[in-house]
Structures are given as C-alpha cells and as structure tokens.
Image (cartoon, rainbow, N blue to C red; front, side):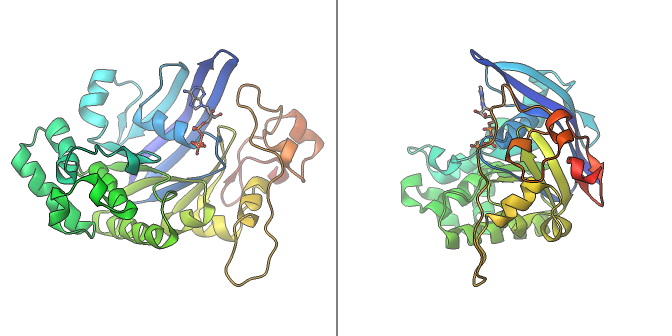
Length: 315
Ligand SMILES: Nc1ncnc2c1ncn2[C@@H]1O[C@H](COP(=O)(O)OP(=O)(O)OP(=O)(O)O)[C@@H](O)[C@H]1O
C-alpha cells in the first residue's frame, strides 16, 4: 500500500549570493512498512529534502513547491495551521541530525519522551509518562530510565530516547537524519538492530538519511542516491547494491571499506557543486570519468533500466 508519494518537489533558499537549489525536482514513492535510504555526500540536499517533507523550513525559503501525498491526503495544499495540528509529529515525525545532544538537560528523559503525547495528542501527563515507560522497554531500556536526566545516559541510550520521542505518537512515517553517525560502531549496530525490530513489529515506515552507503544497506528496502539536489538513482536495495548504475553511486560504493578484502579505497575527486550555479547538463559531469559530450550540454532525463537512473549512459 502506497504511504507516501512525492512528485517534483522543490525547495530553494534565498541568499545574498543567489538562489540555492537544495531540492530540485525530486520524485519518489514509498509503501507502508518500507524503508527508503537516501545516500549522498554532505551538501547534496538530504536534510533539505527531509525538512521539505515535514515542512520545517528556514525563513529564507525562495521556492517550496511540488506534490506530497501521505495516505492519499494532499499535504502541500494544507494550510500551516492544519499541517501543524494534524500532520507534523502526529503523522510524520523526525529525528534530527545530532538530536541526541539536544535533549533538555534539566528535564527527566521520561517527561521528554511523553511530551509530544501531551502536546499533540492531549494525553494527560500521568498516562503519557506510563506510555513513555512502555516504549523505553520496547526500545531495550528499562522503565527506570524515565527517571534519569540526559547526563546520566550514554550516547546510545540518548539516541534511543530521541528515537522514542519521534515514535511515541505512533506516526505513519519517521524520518531519521544520520541517526547513528555520532555513535561508535557497536552502539551503531545496536541502534540499527533496534530499528530493524521496530520496522518488523510495527510495520514502521522510515526515511533513513545517511552519507554512509554501507549503514543504509542494513535497513533499506529501497535506496536513493542524491546528488546536487536531485535523486540520480533509485532502486530496490538488493539491485542497488549488486548493480549500481549511476557513476556517482558506483564511486560511493568504491569509497567504502570492506573487511578482509584487499582493495584500494577510491575517493571521488572534487566536491559536490555549488547549488547556486550548478554545472550545465548533468550536474555530476565535472567529476565523472565516463562523461560524454552530451553530459556537458543536456540534463539527462530519468531512464528505466530495471531501476531508475538519471544518466546519459543508459539512454
Ligand atoms: N537555510 C539555508 N540557506 C541557504 N542555504 C542552505 C540553507 N540550508 C542548507 N543550505 C544549503 O543547501 C545545500 C544542501 O544542504 P543540506 O543540509 O540539505 O545537505 P545534506 O546533504 O543534508 O548535507 P549535510 O549532511 O551536511 O547536512 C547546501 O549547499 C547547504 O549549504
């Protein structure tokens, strides 16, 4: 069943130097219970895409348009008041990058987890805290953690608490922005296992944003590569990892270390382009060793080659 459908989404920012096209014509679908991982280097627009979906926008928005359907409801045509009351945190919630450091140091963890229920669902404090405790247990922490303050928790525990805050209202969709990048590898594995359990037991739908293509493989049913504000490849996870088509995805794969196998890690020369004046034609062409004449001149459409890829090689 289709839960989310995003079409031609754009989010541009106004700056003194010009207009930053952070999300530029992005489209994808997501079914209930699926996880979409969005991968790409820093600055490709991953966080902007998630903010566009949950409509938490900075003041300097220049353009915000396109279509977002959630469970058949058209979100873009909804006014801000209705969106705030009915959608944000109730139907779509988000764990922000670095959120584990944003817990309020003077409030008990249980209260902070319970708060969205009190604010957005009008549940009374006693019941909300009970529900927070139940959720802590589901996430592998004991009830007594509700009585602790953030400084009494380790990084992994704080991350569980932050995920609990996003989960407590039982939203249809949770966006996780780099949820494990601040954690050591063992804690990272624990959090990923917890997310996998949630995905199975609650049929929870996630959008999982990461710069780490190998972490994404743990949870993803579908993977999208984002480059310079656009989705350049999107595919079911197994096809994506076995047969990446876009030269940028192929380069991202080659930059990841594998245990035991001797291989030289490749880096991608250059950096993602400035999004005020992106390169002509295909935005990746200045860094692509397969670039052809047409790549410099014309923006490639998305071709269907078993999966979607925006690259002239597949014309
Ligand atoms: N409020 C803003 N005003 C102007 N430019 C912005 C604003 N927010 C982000 N940007 C720019 O938009 C582009 C995309 O940023 P975004 O944070 O969405 O990328 P990202 O892929 O999530 O990277 P990271 O992982 O570093 O957050 C970048 O060039 C960034 O500098």
